[in-house]
Picture (tube, rainbow, N blue to C red):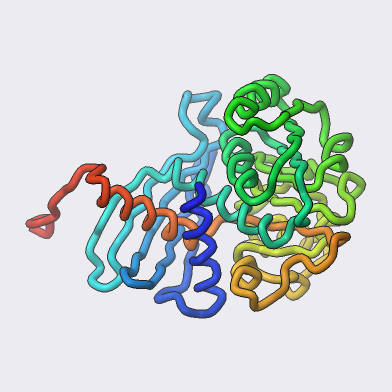
Amino acid sequence: MDACIEAVAAAFATHARGELPAAPGVLGTHAGSGGFHVKTAAIGGARGYYAAKINANFPGNPAQHGLPAIQGLVALFGIDDGRPLALLDSIELTILRTAAASAIAARHLARADATTLFVCGCGTQGRAHLLALSLVRPLSRVLAYDLDAAAARRFASDMRAVCGVEIEPVADVAGSLPRCDMAVTCTPAREALVRETDVRPGQFIAAIGADSEGKQELDPRVLAMARVVADVATQASHMGELQHAIAAGLMSVADLHAELGEVVAGLKPGRTSDDELFVFDSTGTALEDVAAAAVVFERARAARRGRELSLAGAAA
């Protein structure tokens, strides 16, 4: 996770400075009871990479088919000659890079003395976010909420042993979020879980769940109250929490405080006072995917892991 955080931070900063060899792209498609995202991006450096990730997101999979809700592949190419370099399962990669982006946002936007965290959604992303955020802020207490109370209890038991932090399962959002300095919402919700009365000045909220049209975890009035930083402004405006604030007439893209890369690169300020309320609107970008995939590929090659395949004669 620490290597992923640094790689993703570098990719965001490079993008903000306009130094990428190709602009990120995204395509979303609904299909049956789920949908697909195709995300592409490239990074330069001593060795440049291009990645294309195809993710299927079918929320009913765990209950109906015993399969993960998100499944997919990442194809990694060399940027100089277009050579296919690797084909990676995207599940772990997506988990890690999403949490890494939130940790980068917290590093710049959470109060320096933030030690308490509210986790809304105790699935895989909730676990990854707890690990990632613990690397950028010294956590002293975690409150864990899930619509499935048993999931919150399992989360508390499992992650207490992993992180060595006191974790308390809680019964609601309204009575718990105000008690914490930081929060992460990572659910498949399609209506607001967090109301404007649940937040207070000085907090940092990473909103993860809204990554396609119609998904929502925060009341639009929360965004209107806050300084909002998006991973990618154009995506946030039609896929993230920002889509709902725009639809409600409370915000426009011009009202965003910044994109995350601009903050990381020092082009725009992060937190400047203890009473600012910050929301990180995370929709997921291929910048994160290509940065994380490059780390995995380089480490796999160095450790002689993975299976080498030859494409010689494939065109025939």
